[in-house]
Image 1 (cartoon, one colour):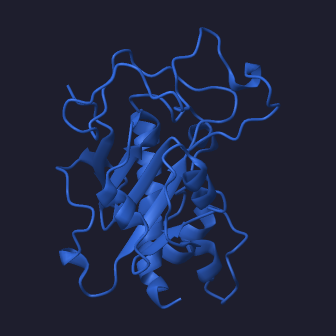
Image 2 (cartoon, rainbow, N blue to C red):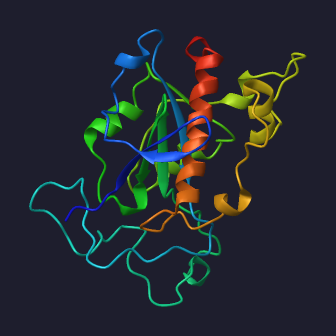
Length: 236
């Protein structure tokens, strides 16, 4: 049975989470009034731990007949011995954690792609990410493009704009140094919408993400999409 490496969810204005049927990544029909804007987020488990992948897991994006029980030799996630931690792995004193998830949001549809459980990436997704005509928007995202490019999937994404550099408060002051919560309150009028540090620092390499992880990852990408459209970043 193919593993659910791509999970599709939607969030409503009350931040409730519910599943949706898969929608094509490049479906632009609902957003024809402006060029395509995509909210982007990347998550990774902190240096020091990663979960073991499930035994005998398969990869839904492989070609038919090419399923393997074991990950490829260069995979970050070979099955570690009990008690394995990055810190125990010689000879490096520090290992830069690879990205575990990639979130893409258009409108109220968000894809969470579990990169650490994908054996390969479809060419359609690679082409979509590299499209210079698409405006990709994130927040506090200085490491995202580098991590994607240096991952074992070698994902190249067109320029990812940081929404902080394009929004201001009611008095015209830059919000570039402000938190996610402050930006949402100033620009969207919602109070108390924050990214929980405990969830941000949780294990994103797990096979089944918890609801809190899915909600936070979706919320991050959704806000970036909404503010990218509001700020007309395709004109930036």
